[in-house]
Amino acid sequence: MRLATSGLLILCFLFSFSAHAQLQMRGLELGGWLGSSFYLGDLNTQFRFNHPNLAGGIMVRYNFNHRIAVRGSLNHGRIEAYDSESENTFERIRNLSFQTRLTELSGQFEFNFLPYYHGSRQYFFTPYAFVGFSAFHYVPKTIADGGQSVKLRQLGTEGQRQGERYSPFGLALAYGVGIRWDLSYAWSMDAHLSLRNTTTDYLDDVSTVYPDPVALRASNGDAAFFLSDRSLPPEDGGPRLDREGTQRGDATVNDRYFFLGVGLNYYFGDVICPTVTKDKKTRRRQKRAAKERGKEQAKRKRARRG
Image 1 (tube, helix red, strand yellow):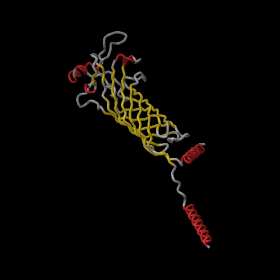
Image 2 (spheres, one colour):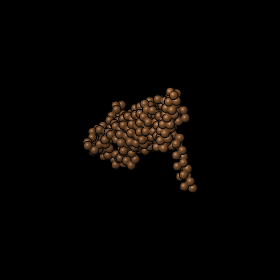
Image 3 (cartoon, helix red, strand yellow):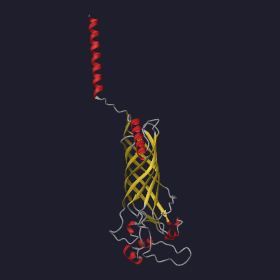
């Protein structure tokens, strides 16, 4: 049964190859996209998507053929989350929040699930998948009690001293799925869901435990002291708890973000029929036939002169 299945798959592949061997799509595309950016992490553990911030980017894609392409892009978005909106009691009492802008460079390998040729009436759309890497920059902020926006990284809200604070740059595994379709030979559109598994747990400035508040105030200042622990009294009453050394975030799971967008692209390449190279015997037969035709024409000319 397994052998028969493997044979069927090979036959399907060969049939697909022969059906499209006479077409080649190779060339460059430029485009842009608009959509929304979202965040998942310590301040959004329940998959709330109630803050769809505007995001967008520009991209360049090189198509090697009708199945495979590589893509590079420059993207920008904004993410945010608020414990006050959570249904989790621990998170509501923790009462933290953040906002940050993300700027990233991304490179991805793309695979079309269906044959796709610009300008074709039959092969004008395809679902596709992609995987690659991204490098991004971020600066988490929060709104202080006075209403001003404060950058959190420089404060060291979990007790980080100067030189120990997390980097404002990060890397991410970039992957996702989409669908693309033609508008004309040159113009096309696509819709995509593009996820990022990052190498940092500090997109939201929350990762480990609450530091010693006295030591934090002495080493990092009043702003770090007030913004590190903004927790509320228990919801069932009682005094505000001492949280030194208790859980502030979950350092075992890094933060994630993703884009949902629609793009418009322009194709600069060609869809061509490759030249078919004849074998040697065929070329020899063609040469002999041409010589024979030449001899016949020469005989006719001589007969006319005679």
